[in-house]
Image (cartoon, rainbow, N blue to C red; front, side, top):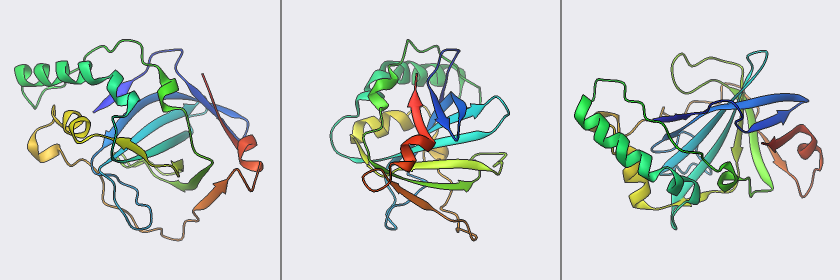
Length: 189
């Protein structure tokens, strides 16, 4: 389940390079853990630079209040579920989505984790820069159920198991202690 973006999408700047938001998608349950805890939902915002480098921002969700960003796409999700039901689960279903206000995803955290890894979906390409936001957002049970609803039962749990670090360094950036990070990674668009 993913939302693809046309031209004019949001971007991030990382180490002086612009990375354009190409698509976002959800995994249920989360693929990342925090203090060994899995979360009911994780959002990946996949960005690509002109040279083909990939940077993914990951947002973890725990149960609570409705998420305002997810609320924007609920109507499209319900329509997609109807299209999948009509076409069959083995067919690709695409549906245009109205303008999405990315401001609802604005980073509201002063710290995040960064590491070099791979994509979590095939072809699992390496050399991907990951940014896992430290603040866990809230989502309702109904929102998670609706995100899963267009998928057949066997695909409703669509997360890759947590992988070993294999010697990777995971760095914590805390903007309260290091102003360095804001120069390294910023959001625009």
